[in-house]
Length: 248
Image (tube, rainbow, N blue to C red; front, side, top):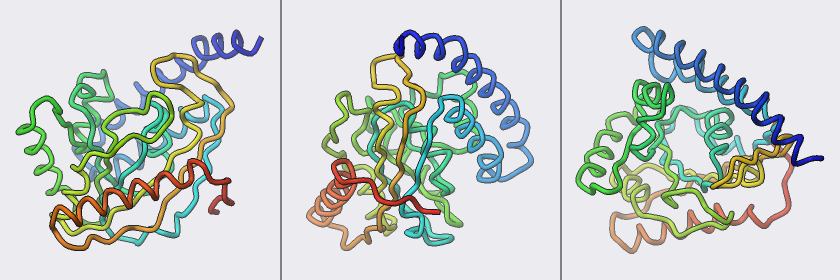
């Protein structure tokens, strides 16, 4: 009975509600962007949009380590990537003004694509290295007044729930800008909506863990590799650890 219930709930309740909510907040975003700063528009539109979509899914999110954040500090944020629901969890509960680095195909997604563009998120064409570098250069100009940039350093969603090798782009940016790296671990989102399926499982439990920021030392390849490996080890730790008590 449970699979049938999940199927009916997904297509008869969750999908229509999510589509209506996306349309409503997408229109509100486009109306507000000409008059308000992007970070404020995101707080008024993207954050409640994400939390409502999680609410419709019956997903509870616990946040750990929020005390690691320093006010007005910009970070290069790196997170593992397990599911499409990562977007809702990060946007809804990270509590940081950030610009996402995302694949350029997402620009074509109705409503979401144009809103992301207007909010200043960064689209990367991975098949064109020169265009990708130019996009990252544009991102640097947006890191002011505590704004951060967020990467999925695996480059794509994990297909099996296991952490994949990291790419260097996020850590090169951290080196060049001398910004601390903020590792973030997501757990539980893989079970909500595994990659490659439409089998939503309502009532799951997701966790968002913010780790201590990692300072950048040096500008060489050895320091970059060390920073990347340290970030990966930090993100990997909670994937097998027992759950801590959530932050208030």
